Every structure is written in structure tokens, then in C-alpha cells.
Length: 596
Image (cartoon, rainbow, N blue to C red; front, side):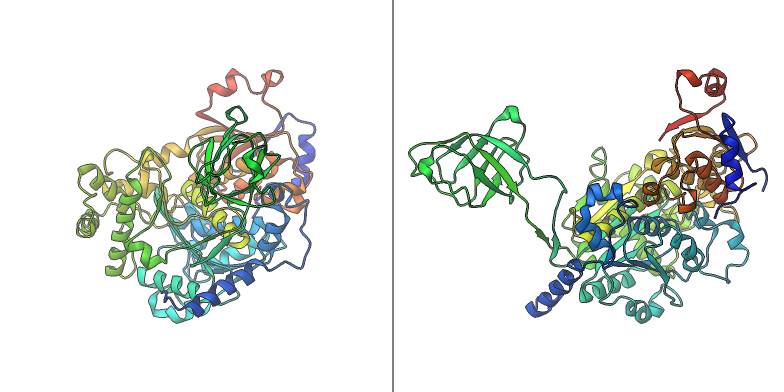
């Protein structure tokens, strides 16, 4: 994985005597049968109550434990995932789940790598294209993914293809031992529905997510009765009582200068040290809340109208309780989604439009042997337009802007873009952890996200977006064109920080080709050395890098992903006393600065 000009130890030692080092490489259903549903709930509860036999490595997972807690971490350590698809998004999801410390993950992707994968999967390189029949994407990635966390078992499962021709073999992999099933590549709709139904039968959580150019979607179905043990991970809310009005139902008002009560309808609270109400308020009892405002709420079903005096003073404390959530199946949500989660409030109508686009894409794939539209193919773009119009029951596909957006969507549907994979990989990775731990509220149904702001205003000519079949930048060319890709290679960037975000940025830049021409360059600085706790979230580092400089190791790892990257690492802070290094002459040569 790491490609180095000289041993890392020598590089680090030399840096203790220099301001910076230059590390550069040139060239180179659900029926309503109650007994069945009870069985499914029981299977889910058994998985959620499983406890890992090993102790939690507190040094490795220290930051994560602050958020998840030991109980949730142990549940994750007893959970297993089955991942279908190891293109860009699949690699990101697998990486995140392994770093988080689930018990095991099984990778299933029989497809050989293609040039589109190279812009999103950081463990594939152009050499893998020369002999595509030798190994599948899953096999090529397994060993490097396993290096991320020795506590996690990383396995592969073999099927001839992810198509309906091998439906039974695929479904046989989904058994009662699997906690969550994740699909991260476009599959024909009938197969996705069958896999979702199989998950419901065995009590496994189901996640389906794809990235198509600058557009993406995620769908979650955790079954008919998924238990969320802690929906927000926050400490119980506490407020001081201003008054309790003796009414039916009783109304509580909290002191405004103490802040909002933070309660939602359905929450439970207890009371302490309340005066008045003729002693009718039981301080040992839990009361259900109906929120009526930021500072007021009612007590559901509590009649205090017979009390002669109102309640004053005292305190309320939230009682956190598990919440049972019912999800729609994939087939149900396709036709009649209960919820389309909003990702950008400036695009309030976008979720419905993207839901329509992806439905049209499913129909297109069914009619083209599971294939996606080709970049710059006008005929296939027009076919997608016709499909959208035929499926548009709500008359939302009704203007020229929507049509251009759809044609961009179709033309770039094969593209696997690193930033999109990283963003969705983080989101989907979190949903996997929610499925395994039962902590935090999952996405309920569909979630859509896009970055259409980055697209050109008009469709690019076919010759500008046609892929070569061999370039590691084919995905970006398919979306943004060859001219913009040339500009990307010439960028001269300064990255301040090589920690968790810095590692992600260097990975993205390496896959995108930033600073990968003779004119381009990357500068990265970080004063810190690597600690064990960094390894669970800074994926460019391994245990043998502990005590070495982050900037040096990160630079070497980035060059391992893309040997064309020109990069210089520093161990200096950016401040007034380093202006002799990072001064006007330095900044005048840059095209951008990223603080991480």
C-alpha cells in the first residue's frame, strides 16, 4: 500500500534536522401474521443483545467511546455485515465499518475493476485493469482493508455475478448470522427487492445506497420493529418549572431564562420538589409529554383540573426510553414513500425529483441488461427523459431545468467520484453503526443528496466526456470533461493538518489527480506524531507508524495511491514565526489552501 523512495524511518529521522522534507515521485410482506412478526422481532432483539466476548480496546477506540459508549461499542463488536459492491462507495463503507470495529465484514463483488472505479476506490490502480480476469474487486481490496483493524475479520464471498441469473446464490448468503446487509452498486430493481425481502425474513437490517456521478441515494429498512435504545445520544434534558396549570390535561411551563425544555412529543419526564397542586403530582411516576412549544408541554392523560392551587418551582428530568421504529420495505417505499429525507433545504423539491430519476434509471437498467447510460450518449439521455415523463404521476418533471438535470444525471451515471463516495460512505457507514448498535435514530426510508452546483451549465459535447477505458480519471472526465481534468492536475494546494480530515482530503486529491502534473503540487504540514488512538479514524496510518510524523506518513500513503502526485511534507505550525517558510512567496504560488 505504501510506496516509498526510502525507508520511512530514514525519512522521519532526516526531518528532525530539517524544516521540511520533500517527498516527491516523478513520472511513474410482509404478511401480517403475528407469529412471523414476533419471530422477526425476536431475531432482531437477540442480535442487539449480543455482547462481544473481547474487551473494548479503549486506547484504539477512545474518541469513538465518547460518542457511542461501551455498551454500543460491544454491540458493534458482536455484529457482522455483508457488503455487496466494492467500487468507490463500497470501499468507503467497508473502510468506515472496519475502523469502527464491528466483528466481521464479508465482501461480495465478483466484478473485475474498470477505469471508472479508479476515481473512487483507493485500493485499486491502473495495473489492475491490465488483467481484469485475474481477481475481482472484492479480492483485490480484502487484504488492504483487513490491515485497517486487526480486531475485524474481513472475508470474501463468491458468486458468479450480482444478477438475477444467480439470485438464489446471492440470497443464500443472507442468513440469520448477518446483522446488516449493504448494497453499494446499482443492481436491477427485482434483485434489490428480493434481497430486501430476504433480510426481512431473517431479521437483518438492509441498506441500499448508490453514487451516480454527483447524485446519490441511500435507503434504510431495519425491519417492522427496530429498537433504538438511544435516539440522540444526549444526556437527559433537565429544566426548572415556572408553573404547572391545573387543567385537563395539565400544562407545564419552564423558565425561559433556563433555556428550552428540549422535549419531543412521546418523551417521558419525572418531577421533583414541585410545590402546590394539592400534592397530586407523583414524583415517583413517569409522565408522557405532548410538546406544545419550546417552553411548554402537556402531560398526556393527566387531569389536574380538580386541584385548587397551581404547581410552582421544582424540576423536570427527561427519562430516556427505547423507541421502536417501523420501516417500509424497499418495494413499498418505491411506490409510496412515507418519507424522503431532506439534505438541502435550498432544494426543497429535489428529493421527489431524484426519486423519480432513480426510478427511471431502474427501468432503463431493466431494458438494457443491467447497464447504465453511457457518458455523452444523447439517445440514451432522451430515453431517460421519456421514461421520466411516463413515470411522472405527480407532474414534477415539467420544465427545461429538470430535463437538463436529468441528462446530466444520465450522462454521469457510470462515474464514481471520490468526494461523493466519501460523503455518502460516511453517511452509510453511520447507518451501519446504528443498525449494529441500536444507538441514534436511523434514516427512515430514502435519503437523496446531490452536488449539481459543480456541474457545467450546459451539457458537454460527447468528445469531451468520452472515457478512455484506461485512465484513472475516466469518472471525472465523464462528469466534468477533459479540459477541467487537465486543470485539476495543475492545482497547487496547501493542506494544513494531516489528521482525520487531512487524511481524507489527501485520499480524495490523490484519486482526483490534484497536484499530479509537472505544474501541480501539494504541500502538507502537521506538527503531530501518530498515536494509537488515531488509528481508528485516520485510515492512512498503521500501527507501525506510531510515533512517526503524520504529515510524512500521510504524504507517503497518498503517493502510494497515485504515484504521479507531487507532494512536500512539513512539521511546522502556520504562524508568524514560520513566515520564513509560509510567507508571501509561498502563498503566491498556490491555487488553494485547505485547513483540516
